[in-house]
Image (cartoon, rainbow, N blue to C red):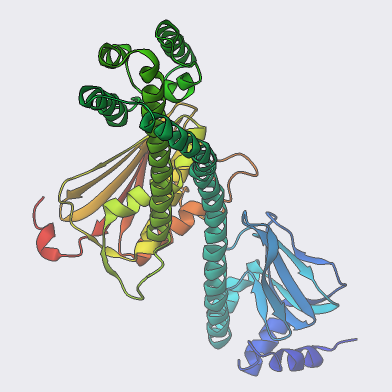
Length: 471
């Protein structure tokens, strides 16, 4: 059986509270209870009230939290540590499950005794406040890391989708280009074996040139493509040209009028190899152009990702191009916007000065806010992103036409673990992270919400103070 003296001796040997005067430890021993916990036992359970301060005397306790990146151990306490409700702590509910990893002994003091402890045990209170600040720092770092992992998961999924389209286009076009090049070589040999007058050669060059110079604008509908192919087939049949030529001509914008023009100069057996040569050459060039466009799209995506993550992140605040950050953030979220048939617009004031901050953190802010807006809107909804210089600050507005934020949570929207999303879709940490990142960048954020219009307004310091003098 543990006596009062034994308990005070154990508290005096405690790393965190041991340095307090013995009379304060005696007060503590008189206002709490000693507990033992078997492995797997709970000190606190997720979302349930926490009403006690826990002074760990022996053993090992860990807290497991799922912030959207999967359940994992966020923090742990061993002999000499203190957790639970601490002086001046705003903790009300447990953010996760605190579970004993081995047989654990702890001393618990109910929160009702804390005001008296704060009044009468000054040194003990000071030591516990330091422990609370240390705990807050660890939780903040962990929360930021988890939110980054969630953002990275969304980014990876969107990037994979965005890269898949141009990569598949390159693969298809490269395979098709090989056959088109073989066909172009055969057609070139056939034209070389066909005697053509200078006038006919010029006509052949014109039809090939018109084919290369004109591209199909947009994408034909299945009906339009079918009608185009039927018209070509009729024309080729009337002029005795091999029907295989239609495959190459069908993907070009060559018109019947252009074909009539070349037929007036070149007729008979020579027309077939000339059209084959023109069509196969045009097809090969257009396929190569499609490969180039797809490769450019991949390069653009990679550049956007580099800009979004800001691989060369500075250790101090620096001038940041807000427009580029907004565009990069929208680029990496394009797949999500497309999946909801959403319209996303960016309107940046010409000559907008740079903001002072950390580019990578600002991009995470834009990503979180735009991602939330896309979650809020219905299919076919709209998100407008605007950036202007207002009263000497760079102001970014992210506006959506969703149903708005419920009135009962609007005032707490930036608090941790508060979310308006369905269970499993939101962690309640995104806006808390946004708030802290904006504070780190010396900015401000506020929100205005009503049905059909939710607007997050972020105000940042202008990097060049001289540029911020105009209203």
